[in-house]
Image 1: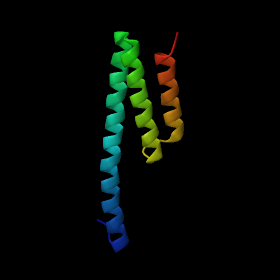
Image 2: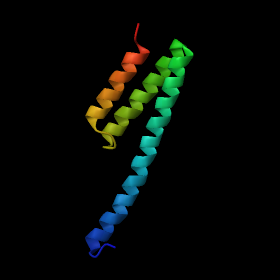
Image 3: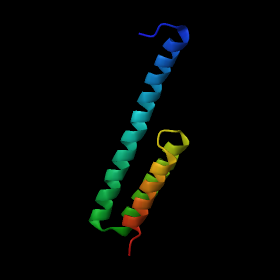
Length: 86
């Protein structure tokens, strides 16, 4: 258990941020699964829409500090590779 007042506050803050981060990461995983199914279905319009939604969510996660920018760049590169491949 935290001993000082600042440590108690830091513990509360840590739990709050952990919950927020988990929600964002779960949403990213869900959007990625939707993207994968859209690509497998072969429908170009739904694949592109899913890709846009996923990349937007990844960028927002980077902005809020949940995901590192290099991880996001790698994920977006992967999306471009599978969706826009000819």
